[in-house]
Structure formats: C-alpha cells, structure tokens
Amino acid sequence: MAQPQPSPEFRVTRLIYRLNSETVTDDFGRAEPLDGELDGWAFRLEDGILSATPSEEFRSRESAKVHLDARLCEWSQSAFLSGSRFQIRFDFERSDVEAIDPPPNHVFVFPEAAPATVSMGTPTIVLGHRAYPAPDPAFRRTPLTDLLTERLRALEDGRAELPAWPIWS
Image 1: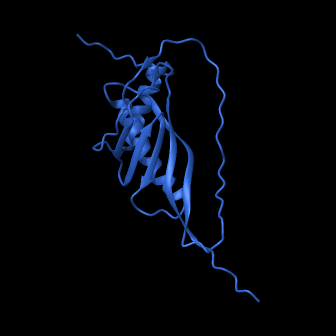
Image 2: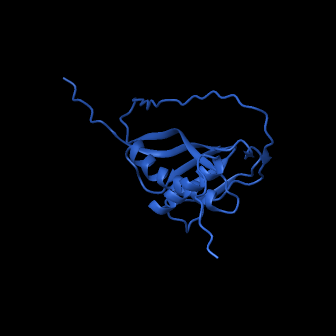
C-alpha cells in the first residue's frame, strides 16, 4: 500500500491590484511606471496595475492581503490629503501562490473569484496625469485620518455641508 504524500506548504509570491480613480476627471492611463518599496513590499505600478512582492513570507493569501491592504489604504489617504486631492483606491485582482517543495509530478491550482464590472456614464472632461501619486512613507493611518478623509470626501462629493459658525463682532 502506498504511503499518502504529505500536503505541501504554500507561500504568496505576489499580489495584484488595479488602481482606480474614484473621480471621473482623473486618468492615469498615460502615467509613467512607478517602482518602490511599501513597508515590506516591493511594488511596480504600471498601466494601472499594481504588482506587489512581499519581502517576508506569507503562507496564506488572506494574511498577505490584510497586510498589504492596510498599506494601500494609507497610500490612498495620503494621495487624497496631498495638494492634488487624488481620490484613488486599489481593488484586489488576484494573487500568485506557489508550493514549497512540492511532490514531483503534482500540479496545484489556486482558484480565486474574478471581479467584473460594467459601467456607463456621461461625457466629462478628464485630466490625464503623467505620474501616479506616490506613497508617502511618513504617512500613517489613524482613526482621526480615517474620519477627516471621509469628511473631506463627503464635502467634495456634495454629501455633506460645512456647519455654520457664528461670527462674533
């Protein structure tokens, strides 16, 4: 009787995200590629696709995604709070996973859900940007930055108004 093969361990080698502008007026389709390091992730942002490779080992897609998602949220907030006020987000596309010391003649498949969107809109003037907003390595997300970012976005989108302040003479 053949001995059962032990299950191999796996590691995440890369996460792929799509950069999306939340405003129709900003287009990064002609932006130059951006390479950098983001808190333990080497990344390349090109043609709206962010490819991030971890410097530490993650054994599950979920743990790698949680770690990088926090960094990408900081990137989005810092881009919005900068003078340019870019409203960007990074949408997860897929991951690359490999087996560590796989048994010979075995193939592993790592299925994931594939996102799909359809949209229609009205004609708008769009600004083509030659550069992506770079992450600010000094920026750290806090509950206060979350609150302020949401408040500023609501003001810009017309979902909120500035409160009236009394003027004393």
